[in-house]
Image 1 (tube, rainbow, N blue to C red):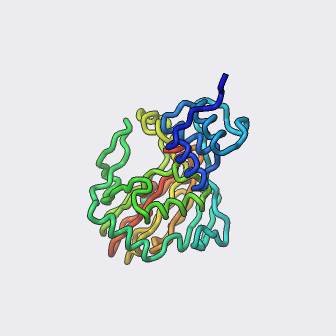
Image 2: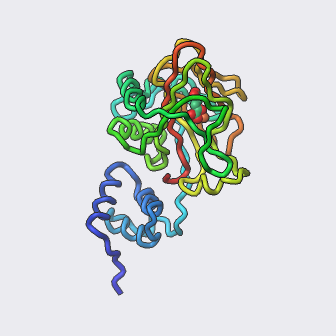
Image 3: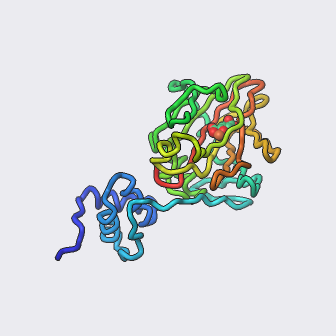
Length: 276
Ligand SMILES: O=C(O)CCC(=O)C(=O)O
Ligand SMILES: [Fe+2]
C-alpha cells in the first residue's frame, strides 16, 4: 500500500514558507489543523515536506497543543533590528515593562492608519457577542493579522520576543482615549463560568497574555494600573507593558486610567493558547 500523502504543490509551498518563517514543524501541523485539515494528513504532509521523522510530530487528534509565552529577561532583548529594554519585571502578575518596543515613527504610522477607521470600542458579552460597555469608553479598531507590512512587522517582533507563533495572536487593536475616557478594571482572560465561554474560546482557546503598546505620551493620566499589586505603568510613546495570566491569574486585574489632559493612543495584542 502506498502510504505517502498526496500533497498539492500549493500546500507543499505553504508548508515550506511557513517553516521558513520560523515555525517549528509541530506548529505547522497545528496551523493546518486550525485550517480544518485532517490530522493524519497534516502530520504526514509536514513530515514529508520538511523531511522530519513522522514520530517527532504529535500523533494526536486535532486538538492543538496549548502554548505559553516566554517572559523576556532583563536587561535587554534583541528582536530583529531592535533592542528592547526590560525596564521593570514582576512575578505576580508575570509582567514586564518594555521600553523601545516601537520606534516613534512606527507609533505615528499606526495612529495615522487607524484614525480613519475608528469606532466605539466594544467588549465581549456573556454569550460571546460584542457589546457597547460603559466600562470602556474609548474608540478603536482592529487590524487583521498581518494586514499591512507595518502590522506584520510588529506582530513578528512580538512573536519573537515572547517566543510564540504569530498565529496565536488576535488582530492588533488600536484604541483612542480622550480626556475622561478610560477602561475600568477588568481581566483580559475569559471567565470559564460565563455562558459564552465555549463560543469565545472555540477558536484559539483561552487568552494567555496581553501586550499594551503606548503610541503617544498623554499629557496627564492614562497609565495602565494593576490595582491588585498597586502598580501603575506610565504610558510613554514607544514603550509597552506585557503581562501573562496563565489559568486566569486574579492579580492580572488592570485598568486604563482616565486621561486627564491630552489624548492616549494604544495598540493591544492579545495572545491565545492555540492558533487563532
Ligand atoms: O488602556 C490601557 O492602558 C489598557 C488597555 C486594556 O486593558 C486592553 O486593551 O485590554
Ligand atoms: Fe485589558
